[in-house]
Image (tube, rainbow, N blue to C red; front, side, top):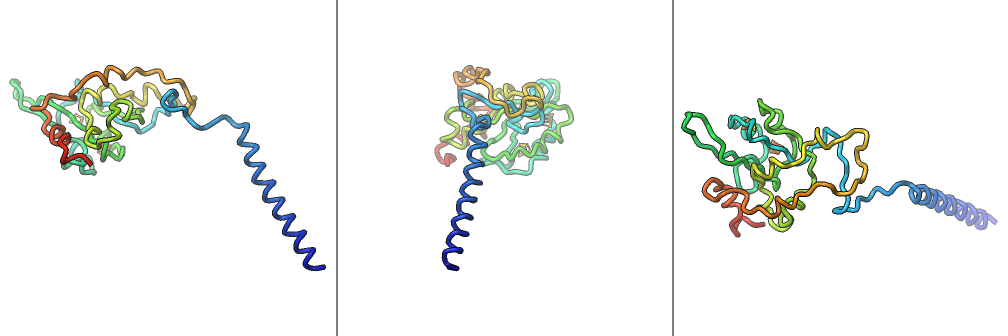
Length: 202
Ligand code: SF4
Ligand code: SF4
């Protein structure tokens, strides 16, 4: 008799457990889908989103504070940020190239905090592979120069708290970036040149 009672109790527990599980499944069946149909859709991000940085060359005073503040070594360079400059005719520093290595950047934004002129600002991009389709095969291609960083969408411009994480059709055209090669001329970009050698490829 006791055996039959135990069997009925265990069967009841099992049915209740299955019912709870199926209830969760049913509720989620009628919720809006969370999966983004990437790359045909993109996510709206909030304005404080920390994506790939936007760099404003016209504001940069080549002080190198961002490079000094960066806590992470690059994949092929001493720092994740590398700045190449020369002394111009006005005896001031002039920027040749500005690199961020997205193979090692941790988006800590210490460089943003260090910049005294807001030349580095939060970016909304989370799709580096779309800007350079080969980036996913070669880590050295994730070193972005000033031209690429200059067109990264800014979080404050494209972000929205009201519509954060909504799915929207892709609307930005980054094709011009894909058509341009190389990122910088080889003489002014030794780090990127070194990074693009087969030995640096991982
Ligand atoms: S976000 Fe952090 S890791 Fe990336 S470049 Fe700036 S300081 Fe370096
Ligand atoms: S801290 Fe700002 S101004 Fe100074 S080199 Fe970096 S980006 Fe340019």
